[in-house]
Image 1: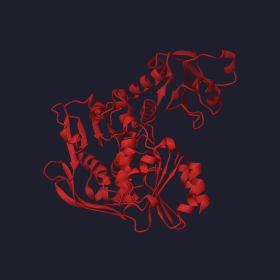
Image 2: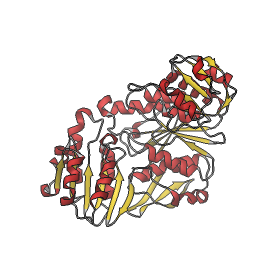
Image 3: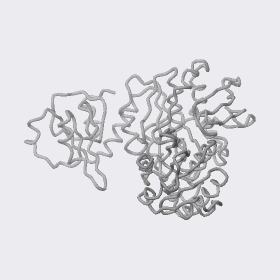
Image 4: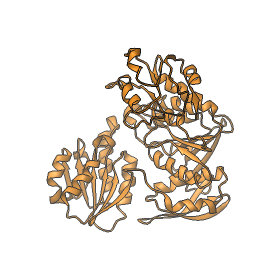
Length: 455
């Protein structure tokens, strides 16, 4: 969306220190490493860095407008550049104000997606499916927090007809902050798991945090929920509309029956516009039937015919490091090391169990489990029995990962990835299917390099 310098200054309650010749701007960035010369540079500061110090890095990339909240500079330093500089009290507050202003000028449908597990996959499925008939915009990667989502909203494509935004949280109040800016008319909750239980203590509190997604709904707005989730199935309200998806013909607005889960993908019959339609998707795992049902429901809401929608089925691709299948020599690798929670670990183990050759799980620590961490890692150990052949545990909770694994001779523990590197050749033979999974902080993408170096 094109904004002129005057409305930007007014919107962010800023002081125009220097005015250049460029008057119109379209997108915004906080990262000088990837910034485009046409972007606005917003100097965000964190605990260990001060974005204000990078203003000249941005200017040297061609940026024509910088918004700062610390004035370290003399006017003489800018004489060589045609640039405008706006000083605000807080660049974080300026980001929020600018996003709210952009939202006020949009006249399109906005969808907010949250959940403990699967929100990125579901957001991508919604984007892919709706794109069969509309110009759709989505926030990319993990741009789902108090910085990423407002930036994504400000940078929305001018020709977008629908916007799909993932909203994340670690604690109460965080989704409220985001939807106060976004003001979606449709909300999606994929499930209520145990991610973030370290901070919120109970699943009921996690539900409360996720339900902030409806804080600004009116009677015509729609919440789509997974009816197979015990907490979500109990939601009722007269303040907004509720659509339920799942496997129950009696209780769901959209349901799947005759499910078939294999290495080739998922097949099922879906109730779509009153008819049961057979579909086949190149996605793995029963959990992705539920994720795709949410996308189907949105397509039904937006009146996309099934014959148009089918054109998208074979072009679906997983997000980076989310159940990406890598064939390396004689080894099949399921690369799912973007994140990990109890629910997502079980889903990934289910997929690994479908393979015929020797099945190996290389597991690292699951984060944000707090006082439940030991219990959840032991539960993964129990769940892996009879489903996988070897378990390799790396990290703080390696003992817990192996505690309930019955075949102790096939369970291996290492304190860190360097220990794994030194021993992996004695454990693997180069003909396995290997699931690599841990929370992002474990940096388990390094396991891929270890396997490639050794075999």
